[in-house]
Image (tube, rainbow, N blue to C red; front, side, top):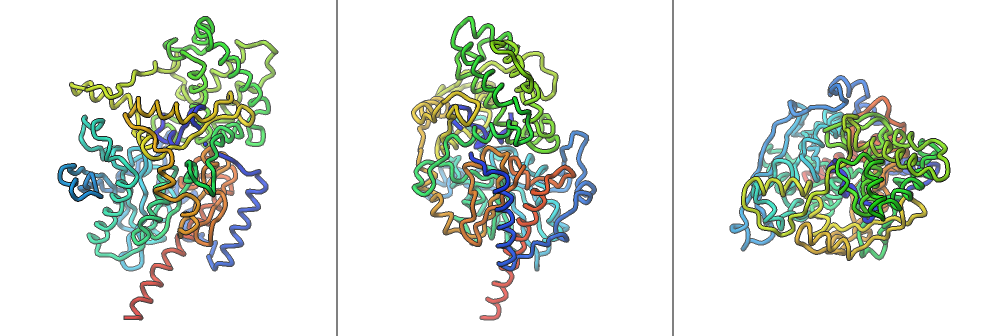
Length: 552
């Protein structure tokens, strides 16, 4: 399962998104282009932007479509304090080694260039290093040094080793942003170069990039924030959270308008309804286990379990509804087909007889298998749900490692401790039963899993929501209408320098990926717009520098 599933993957009892009708999005894209011209921003960035052929030549893909660009980078570490904000606690809290990569230094121009800085999110940073083509393809044209920073508590940047679960309190967005600020300060001193820094981030990385620009505008000069759900939090009086949007857009991806089979949505609804009814009784669960070919019948012990399994699959397929095969959503471990939601809808495309529950559920199984069995090598489905350790004391190294493995990904801690994004389904605009967001239930789950209670309004308090975004500058938000997280993203430009680039036919931050022959035209246009802003920010940096020199 991909780490991108969080903020990347709510279940049906916890979901976010909205989409514009396609013509309106295209019209808005034209308005953005017109506004850029009026602002004097040149949209002709054909020279900085690599062509598809250039990309394939300079950064060749492996046989499975992935890339391994580590040979073009140097792995480095910087010592960071675990607690940046309490001088009295810094010594006792200690420090950790944070990993980062410096890539393609031959392009760097210390006099007139820049630093392209990837704002690492909730995974091993090499995942982003090998997929963020927008940085790689354009570094030479901008004289840019490429830096990929790894988020504390992920990849090789995990403090405390096997005892990490006893010290989760140092995992926060505030500490992470301070890590990045200190890393950039250190890099610029080591390089002896006063150059602009342009941030790039997708999903949670886009959220962090946004907040980085807002909190440290003297350190990061502008940010391209792809698919960043920055307005999915409670407490914003200017923008109430769209709690049901994630599943609404997932369902849009299953529609004929998005290229899927016309019968997919009604058949998926019928199939899931039948499965939920079966899961309500012991005999029904046994039949469901056989129809779904479960490895262990205990995988489904309630109707919520089957809804969760289905929603995880469809949520991932919607985020990864890219036009070509890629391993990104699967963390590089396996590959989804091109437009995987369309593929998942094929088993549900037929006319199923009324009352044909078994056939419908079998079709549903084959549909979600596009996600769960994309390798086509599994003979049964779904691992048994693992037992939570709660606050249990762990003694041996084996027990500690097993507990870490059971947690899967530390994004869950962040969501519980400060980034709560409630989500649900309404049963009308999506394929799921009506399951409203349940803060009380989510809080109980957070305490059981992590030993912390929700702070439901903290993200709004800390980062300011829509009002703070209007006061910000030099941020470009991009959102694709195939991406379920678009509903909790910024969908309209807020000022001349906080702008939105809509991406019709785009899934989860597709614009940040490498150029591909199957890219929709809107993706190429979005990248051109983003690069035009990058050029504008860099030019403004050097113009201001010249102005200061003239005044001395």
